[in-house]
Length: 252
Image (cartoon, rainbow, N blue to C red):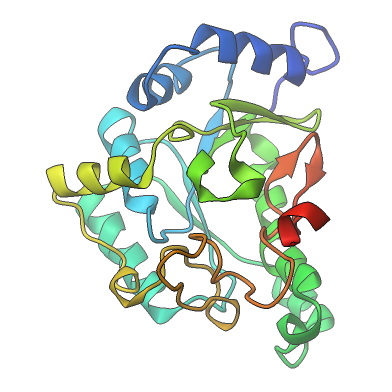
């Protein structure tokens, strides 16, 4: 069960401040290695989309702590290439505890009976297929590891190693300070397989209906929900609030 957060010692914000101070001068590998064993973090899982850059963090975890639970959200709207890639990496990296998370069929049938919810309410579609299932899956964890990085866009440019997710959990972002060049170098040096859609112009990959190729010079996440102000699915929080759209300034 998650730890008691009613005491100052258990308060998420206090623990986050302590962890960020403790690992301020550490690199990604050290942050991940120590954090997975740090009592101030507690029980954690890695949440992975098995997307364009996911293999780096998955490989790091497979080397440092392969028994770490890996939560994979299958929205039932993913590219077939993503599903194939997920199976390939699971076998290649020998991760011990991959858990596929899906929405309750009855909930989807009620909220999206004809599978068109994404066409007129992307937030509602993400909520039923992604946000709610993940929240349920994270119920037994004190924190979770993500692949978020500062270079990925305006909603992520202040990401720290550790973040408070409301008053419930801690989010760990070991690759927060890595750039695209760092990721490329790591993949090449470790001979890691790439997501097949990357070569087709998809630097950020989500559900098939809401993801499009990105042109040279565009934001890496420009292909997500193209034509709308939405930039996040809602599973990530800032100051305890879900982030789904850009601010007016960022949308300009």
